Image (cartoon, rainbow, N blue to C red):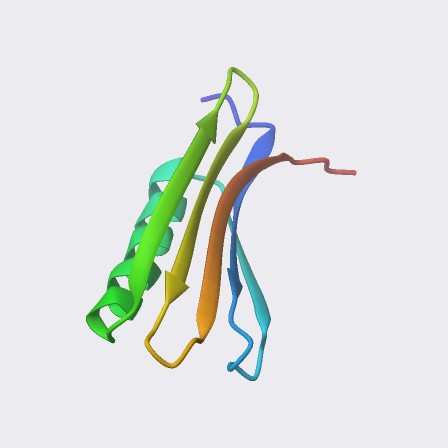
Length: 87
């Protein structure tokens, strides 16, 4: 089985969180998408409205979501593929 030369990075920017710029890296796109969707659905369940965008080419994958609640708090989610370089 050939190993991928990229990882998938999920970034959560939440100004009200203690960790305002949380990042998680995944080797599998399905796990990264599941994490992205889980965070998105949890926030929608808490009353946030979301808008999503995707950008896909042969070499690049980016999925973003902007979540806003009635008090004006905005959370941004980003899923992207990035090259994995090992030593």
